[in-house]
Length: 478
Image 1 (cartoon, rainbow, N blue to C red):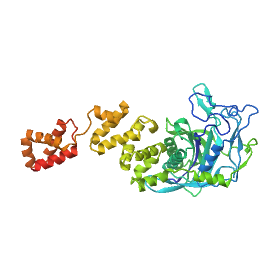
Image 2 (cartoon, one colour):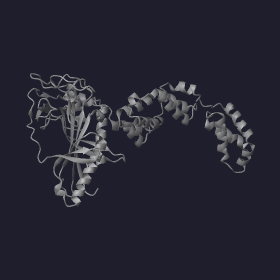
Image 3 (tube, rainbow, N blue to C red):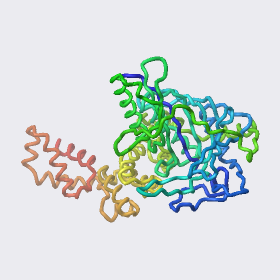
Image 4 (cartoon, rainbow, N blue to C red):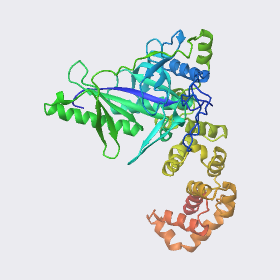
């Protein structure tokens, strides 16, 4: 990178694991039916009042603790005033003025794939309501108020990141934390995660001109948007036109892989914040904070350390397993079924994740449960089937959606391991190939593989190859 880059992030994550929205009794859940999860509060009907969802506050304070933030003594909310169709009230209930946010001045340490770490400084994390979602078509715009009032956590970093890869590593780990704490599914396909990205370059000690990229909906998009913006600003600087880099808001276009100007942003917009008069402030008790601290579950890096130190997994495998909570849970369920940890990790990071990614499937819906995987791996371990047959059985089980034991029996996949049976077959093969035996003893040792192949042919691939090789070695030596 020719010029040092500075990046700040604003990560918006919907709290999806509560029954109702943050200030209303409307259902908090994803729905394909537009405008079905709404209430008079969401639609700002006259005479209605917001009521704070305590569970949303609890989850917010939990995230504040995890991020090593300072919490305020009292919590209250503010109105952020601006009119837009996605906000029926004409304002958003949020938190802004210090020390209002549920957490300020925190930090979190992130591990890179190469084992090094970097620290991300947190400016604040605050709780607010989401706006409705809009869809702009060719000649019409539609609006769905299902999202209006959904609880939203906004996490704002300080300008402390210096590469697109570090920015994505931070976002991925934060997504994992939201999942591990049962705060959110953090599913970008459902619009539950969105990011604003601020990028500047400079060859001095002062920050360069900040360019904001709004509402990037995927982590891959975040990486590409940052790299494109670095490239764009660098080209202008090298052409002597860096003064043309304007403090502005841009959007990322996935089709062209570029950022496109939306509007200038010379000064911060005056949203006329003032305290929300319909929600009384309330004290955050020390007892409640302690209760929240003790309820924080095992976090991703804690599981990673356990997988490496207790189960002997590599850092690479452990990183893959902890990336999503559902994958880590599947791995731990495999351990409960008494599958060897390294065997379970190899199957998950190899065939299983390969299949899930190819078919865009969630492991929660995967037909091969840890119990069925145990049947397959145990059959291989006991020598009943070969490793090659194990892979075939894996795909047969998925395609036919039947128990692996029945498939092994019906397809005759059980491996022949009985020594007397195999010895007789080996004797037959050797008796039928005297010239090949002579060639073997004259130095053509590759004939050994020929004998193995003949035994496998006679048994239709069901002979235990390890025992076949042992018997051949013994009989050829005689």
